[in-house]
Amino acid sequence: MAGVAFNRNNPLVLRMSLLILALFAPIASAWSAATELRSMRTWTAPDNTRLVFDLSASAEYKLFRLSAPDRIVIDFKDTRMRTGITATTDGVVRGVRHAMRDRDLRVVLEVRGGMQLKHFMLSPNDEYGYRLVVDLIDGAATDKPVSAPTSPARTAKRSADEIVGVSKRPLVIAIDAGHGGEDPGARGATGLHEKDVVLAIARELEKLVAQDTGMKPVMIRDGDYFVTLRKRTLKARQHKADLFISIHADAYRDRSVRGGSLFVLSPHGATNEAARWLAERANASDLVGGVRLEDKDDVLASVLLDLSQDATLEASHVVADSILRQMGPIGKLHSTSVQQAGFVVLKSPDIPSVLVETAFISNPEDEAKLRNPRHQKVIAQAIYSGVREYFTRFPPAGTVYAVRRAHTIAQGDTLAQIAQQYRVSVERLRVANKLQNNSALRVGQVLQIPEG
Image (cartoon, rainbow, N blue to C red):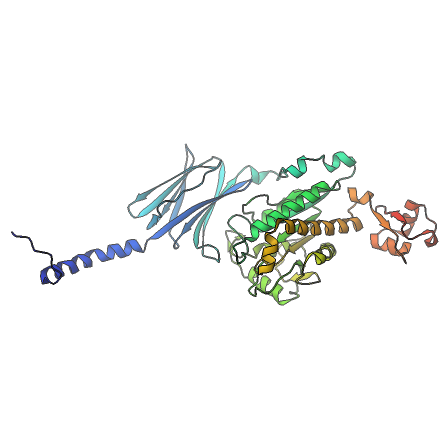
């Protein structure tokens, strides 16, 4: 039989074309509606590895483990993989492979044995779309104290104990660079991420603290990885920190807002509109898998939750005020007084804690300064100077700072005033400096301040 010549005006050809389209349109439509796996990212921390699967839409999935060798299998329902995706591997994730199974996508991860597993789906936020998060946690690390990370700053010099003797301990300063890894924090107009700039400032502060023979730094985060909120404060406690400093560079909806701020917790509300806005965002955050993940201001809430007791809150206020005075000369301050925000108090406090908002990364001028390594060092120096000033005045008993305090007499100083300032008795002050009365004081004289 002779073939039918193609002619779009031929009624027979037109009917056949419409029939083919009608038959295959549902299939094409269904496939085009399938979820797409767009990328696979790996974030490696000292005691865990986070795998993030970026998806075009929320997807049903099943996850299970196989042994000999250890594997994690993830079946994504009605999902296809974008062409050209690569996945990084490390000591925990040793290999990644995938295959289509009908209309489902199977991803197989070859992993190191003995890892605990947690997984959950996240909804889109300002930075990312839908994500499946798989956390591989070192089982051994959950049962042992967190060891202090090694850094060139600490290995380049003898420890404070070696210098001053084991009878007097160094002050332990926990330095927390906010956000990290999957949680980038705020972002400036030119793309500068909060997590990157605050880590750079934290490392500069670590160097300064390590050079002080009376102090010892503990870095809560020393790389681009996510640390859960509970682990941040837990690590500080494990190291018996004397002070917890969290460093941030936040954003605000009004890009004209700029300058640095110091925060401590108030259970009774915020001191300004910007603080109220931050608190509302943090308190409204959903808990995903027991950890706040979605709100870029989440760490602000958790870092400050340990400040409810009066004694710790008072100490936090004093050290925050000391740091704020040091930050004043280096640039514009958003507020000239220590700020308070109404965050939910979740646990009893045991470490004086402050949160340093170095600047607003959402402001173009502030972002440009934050990007400059020289300005990062200036900020770190201001924070360190404030901390040193505070512990010179109020050193914990048994620390190096407690035995080397000194006060230079200024015009109008009296023994009673000096004793009150350093929280020691007038009698101890007289005995330590072999003084009889106020008349023995002279301007410029240096008094040794004994332990209280």
